[in-house]
Structures are given as C-alpha cells and as structure tokens.
Length: 170
Image 1 (cartoon, rainbow, N blue to C red):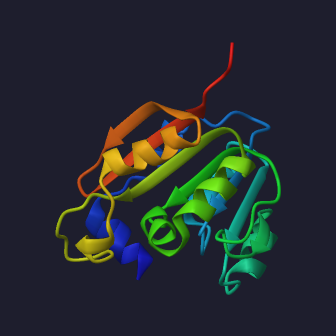
Image 2: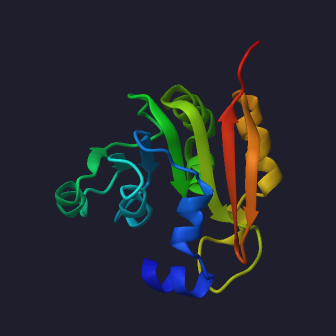
Image 3: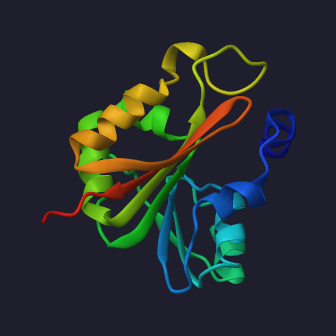
C-alpha cells in the first residue's frame, strides 16, 4: 500500500534523503517510521538510525538491517538525543492527537535538526483526509515555537519537505 502511495505521489526517496544532508556519524530517529522505507536509505549515510513506531510488525526486519527500534508513542516518549528527528507523513496525525506533547518530546530529542515531510492540504486520491492535513505555515510556526528555524524547504507535487535547525544562542 505505501509503495503504491509513494509511486502515485512521485516521491523520490533518494532526493529526499539527499536533501537532509546527513553526515557520517549522525544519529537519526525516524518517528512513525513503520517499515523503515526512509530509514533504510538513511542507513547508507550513517550507521546510527532508529525507528520509533507504535506498531512493531517490521522490527525484526529493521533490526536485521542494522536499524534500532523503539516501540512507543511519541505522545508519551521523549528519551534519547538525536542529531536529526525525521517524520514522514505523520506530523499531521501527531498534532491532531497530542500537539503539545509532540512538540515538547521532539524538542527534547532533537540535538540539531527536525525534518518534516508531509502532505499539502489539498485533495488527492490518497493520503489522510484534507481536514487533518497541515499547512506548511502551521508546521513552521510550531517549530518556531520550540526554538527551531527553517533552514531549507522543498516543494513536491503533493508534499512539502521542511528542514529545521535548532537556533543557537549567542
């Protein structure tokens, strides 16, 4: 199912991972990473990738590939410290379920960067209902509220990809 959505949406996984500019040695957590689609690509850039998901159906496969796994709900989970917190097509759900906890928890875990790939709030034949999709401006405001600034963005056909960096204090 997810492969079909990726095909229809025109997402180029290599372009997305390249956009993130992952450095060797970076620690990454893929929140809601499910089958590790992006995590497996990130593992080619760094050897420290973790998938956090409520559903552990893919965990054996991911662990065999060298990806760490955590079964937890981001609404309640904030352990660890990662150079990059990555979320693909999940931020809209997290905001609608537990916005303040999500922001608090990802802020605690993110050492340097947070990247969000999510659906634009427009009608498509796939993806979540338009009513729960978030505008890019809403996501930017959320990240600014926890001290992150937008450093890069990429417009895709049905998605936006945003990279935020922790603001340094002088």
